[in-house]
Amino acid sequence: MEQQERRTGEGRRVGTADPFEQGRASFARRAWRDAYTHLVAADRDEPLGPGDLERLAMAAYLIGRDQESADVWTRAHHEFAERGDTARAARCAFWLGFFALITWGEPARSSGWLARGQRLLDDGQLDCVERGYLLVPSALQALWRGDPQTARSVFEQAWSIGKRFRELDLVAFGQLGQGQALMLLGDVPGGMSLLDEVMVSITADEVSTLPAGIVYCAVIEACQHTFDVRRAREWTSALTHWCAAQPDLVPYRGSCLVHRSEIMLLRGAWPDAMDEAQRARELLSQTTGRTWVGDAIYQQAELHRLRGEFGRGEAAYREASHAGLEPQPGLALLRLAQGQVDTAAATIRRALDEARDHLRRSRLLPAYVEITLAAGDVQAARPASDELAEIATSLDAPLLRAVAAHATGAVLLAEGEARAALQGLRQAWAAWQELQAPYEAARVRALIGLACRALGDEDTAEMELDAARWAFQQLGAMPDVARVEALSRNATSSSTGGLTAREVEVLRLLAAGKTNRAIAADLVLSEKTVARHVSNIFAKLDLSSRAAATAYAYEHGLV
Image 1 (cartoon, rainbow, N blue to C red):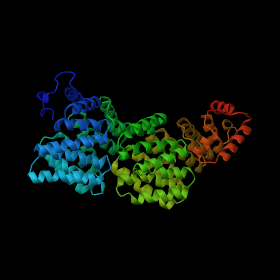
Image 2: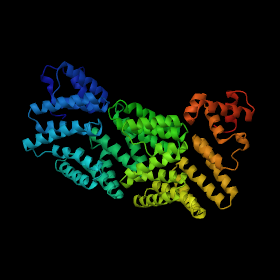
Image 3: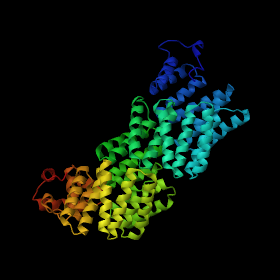
Image 4: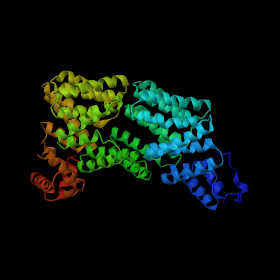
C-alpha cells in the first residue's frame, strides 16, 4: 500500500503543509485520528486514489467511525475494480464482509460482499492471497454454529495460503481460528499453544493493526472462557501497552478495558472495575459493534448485583441483552439474591440446556449448583458439580479447579457429608487465596464455617463466618454481608446494635448518602418499607438524624 501511489505530480502541494502527505505520515506512525483528519482534508481537495482510500477506511474504523469506514472501503473497492486490480478489490470486499459479520451485525450485507469478492477472484481465475482471506468468515461461521471440525479445516486452508504468500496477517488469522477450534474440540492445551504462538507474532509487531487488535481480543476472551487467569492477565497487560501506544484506538481499547475490569473484579478492586467498565461502555458506544458494548454493560450489572444494587443490576442486565449478549448466569443469580428461587432455577436450567460446548457449560454450572442447592434440589446439584469437576480436570486451569472444588464442597455439605466437604472447601479457599480472589475466598470461608458448625465446632464456625463477613464488608458485598450475619449466632452483636440483616443493609446505603427512594430501588423494596426500616434503625440505635446514623455506621465498621 505504502509504495503504490506517489501522487505528487497531480497538482498537490508537496511539503509539511500538504494534508495528503501528512495523512500518510500520520498513518505510518499510527496516529489514527490525525491520519483520518488529514486524509479527509486531502480527499476534499482532490479525490484520493484507492490505496489512500484504504488507509482512510482503516483510520476511520480505528477511531470508531464505522459508517464512514464502510463508505470509504466501498469507494476503494470500486476504484480498484475500475483500474483492473481485481485482487485488491476483492480484499476490500473481504473487509466489508468481515466487519459487517463480526462488528456491524449485518449478516446479509456481509454475505453479499463476501460473495462479490469470491466472484471477482473466480471470474479472473486468480491464485492470490485474497482467496485465503475470504475463507476466514466461513470458518468463523462454522465455529459459531458449533462445527469446530469444519472450522479447523477451513482455518488451516487459510493459514496454508497465508504461509505460501508470506502474508503474516492471514497466517495470524489462520492460527487463531485453529486454536479456537481445537479448544472447542476439547484440546484446550493444544489450542492454547497455538494462541500463544500467534501472540508472539502480535507482540513482535509482525501483524498490522486491524488483525492484531482482533487477535488480542479473541485470545484474551479465550483465556477468560477457559478460566486461565494467568494468561488473561499477561495478554491483557500486553494489550493495554499496545493500546497506550495508539491513544486514538476505539474498538480494541474498549475491549481492553472490559478485560481489565473483569480481572479487577476477580481481585476485589470493585470501584476500579466499575470505572473501567464505564470507560469501556463509553468508548464502545461510539461504534456500531453492539455486542462489544454488551460485555461492558454486563460487567457493570455484575458489580451492581454483588453490591446489592439490584434495581440497577436488573436494568443493566436488560441493557446487555438488548445489545445482543446473553445475560446469564448473572441475571439468574440476581433473581436468587432477590429471593426468587423458582425463577432463578428455571432461568439457569434453560440456559444450561441450551449450552452445548463444555466451555460455555463451565461458566453456567457453578451458578446452576448454587441455585439448585438454594432450591433444596440436591439431587440436581450433584451431577452438575460432578460435570464441573470433570471439565476442570480436562482444562487443568487453577481458577476452574477452585470453582469446581467450591461447588463439590457445597454439594457435600448439603448431602450431610460435612467432614468431606470441609476438606474440599479448604482446598478451594487456598486456591482462591493463591489467585488473589477475595470475594470467592470469602464465599468459601462462609461454607467452611457452616461445615465446622455441622461438626459441632461452634467456635471455629463463628470465627470463619466473622472472617467472611469482614471480607464482604471490605468489598461492599452487601447481600453477602446480610446472608452471613443471618447465619452467624452473633448476627445481632453490639456492632450492629441489634439491627436485623436488612436494617444493616439499609443503614449502609443510608450512610452512602442515598435517599429512601434510591435505597428502595437498590433493594427492590417499596419506599414505605424503607421508611419503616429507617424508623426502626433510629429507634434501636437511639438516633435522631440521618447524619447521626451515618456517623454510627462508620464508627462501628459497618461501611
